[in-house]
Amino acid sequence: MEEKKFDLNTVIGFVLIFGIFAWMFYINKPTPEEIEAKKAEQEQVEAKKNESDNVATDFVPESKAVAVDPKDSLAMVQAKSTLGVVAYSASLPSAVDKVTTIENEVLSLKINNKGGYIEEALLKNFKTYDSVPLYLIKDGKNASFNLNFGTTDNRILNTRDLFFEPSLTKNGKNSVLSMKWKVSESQFLEYRYELKPNEYMLDFSIRSQGLQQVFNSSQPVNLDWKLQAIRQAKSASYENRYTDIHYEYDGGKDDFTGQGDYDEDKEEQVTWIGFKQHFFTSVLLTDTPFKTATLASKNIANTSDLDDKNIKVTKEFAATVPLELSGGELNYNMDWYYGPTDYKILSSYDRNLDEIVPLGWGIFGVINRYIFIPFFSLLSGFLPYGIAIIVMTIVVRIVLSPVTYKSYVSQAKMKILRPEITEINEKYKDNAMKKQQETMALYSKAGASPMSGCLPALMQIPVFYALFNFFPSAFDLRQKSFLWADDLSSYDTIAKLPFEIPFYGDHISLFPILASIAIFIYMMMTTGQTMQQQQPGMPNMKFIMYLSPLMMLVFFNNYASGLSLYYFISNLITIGIMLVIKNVIIDEDKIHAKIQENKKKPKKQGKFQKKMKELMEQAEQQQKAKKK
Image 1 (cartoon, rainbow, N blue to C red):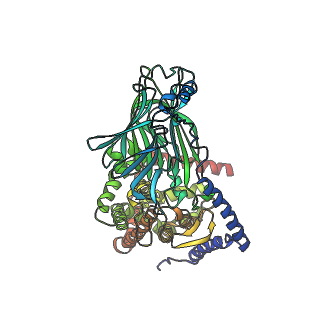
Image 2: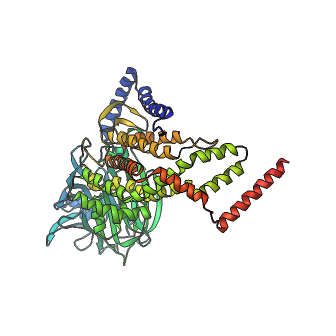
Image 3: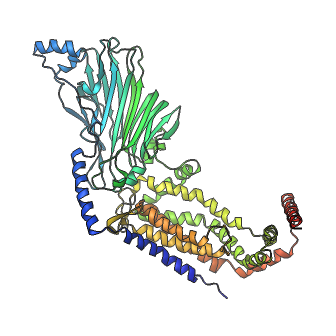
């Protein structure tokens, strides 16, 4: 008699899942009073956030720069007595709050005379989730770059308070901007920027000339770089999950600070520091390793409001680096990267920057680097991105189909042996040792093992985990649409909810629902093959079968729709492969006959098996002796 695929318990369990989900919707639905209260609260929050623009008020300290009229001799005398070496630069025509722009086809940078630092970085070819120009630095509000040093006349100076003199020239096709803070015409501190065509990386150097008598060698020259990560994505919480500091240290090692707050920690021999904002990154690189670098990261957006439309920035980054003087002067050749967190672009610089892209550690990263990234690039070169995901999924499932076949054959053997195992359980229900011994003997004679179905599944884990890292990191998916999903790098939305469900969100995504249904059907097929009567103390397999798709439904609601699309298609294909194996390839009668044949054959036991048998027999004899 053919076994039923859907028993009453299965149907009840399926109904319960959606019943629980509906109940979650209902109990979290706010009352009219709560809606009004929430609306009033939201208006207050919005007003407050609009005032501060979601940027910490003390993030960029107010500049104390002072300009002096060189024609006013009295003012000049006073300036020299109060400002010391600063007086000369404060008297130059460049002592005004004015910006100089250098740009190429992909990047536009504005550098202010006051402080000599980049106060605006615009990526020309990209837009934010709400279709506005994409800035990594805007209006000088979310970034700060400052050198702090002592002088021989016992002053403490900050370059953010100093006026730099700009000089814009060309070096071939490259734009070169020299920003000099001058003590005299021949004595200065220079920031030099050189931007090449079509490059996100610009050459940057810090050098001084004739300042041996200005720098107080007993005090360090500290470089302080800060950045607040401007929100760029539809889901701020999802973006924040991939926003952190990455850095290279100790001759090529790399590390990152993680999602949470990262208290100041000192690293040694640092060669680059990257402030990563999921799909966009600012990186400072140096040819002369920083002896030490103190790094800190802090969440500045309320996690409960991360998807609120008023959130402008998510994390705050800070790096403090002491610069060493050489012969009393500063001389550091660096580079600055403002651009996409794109594996292909970052790896092209051959500076280990591709480690910023979270592709997974060990074997998972290797699979992504040498298989999935090149293969997906090939497919997306001539196919729409959604179709490329589907084709790649099909190929992956076909390649893994032999593993699926072995797993299913093992499950079929266990299903055939189930009546005999049940018989053993009944016969030796009062003797656990004998029951285990007879069960193992049956497996050995039949050439079956419960572990043989697990091993093929374990072999697939590296592939699944690699893809779990690949899709959230695939820059090419950003703002690429497919079917109802307008951005494969973010969640898809088929309905907006008037309230928020904890862990689920305020919207309904369809791809996770489809993936959950496919996973449920797949688990019914696989669990139904080997499901035996539940043993005391063992996990309820039916509960696990219902829990897995429910977790997918809830937690993947805010994940990238490209990842959910992959899981949906992958499970559909696996279901199809298993149906073909069951109905076309595998003959359960033949398997049963082969098992019976194997049981009749004398089974040779290895030394380990003999030893285990002896131990089990001894344990059984000891148990009988105790009962007497």
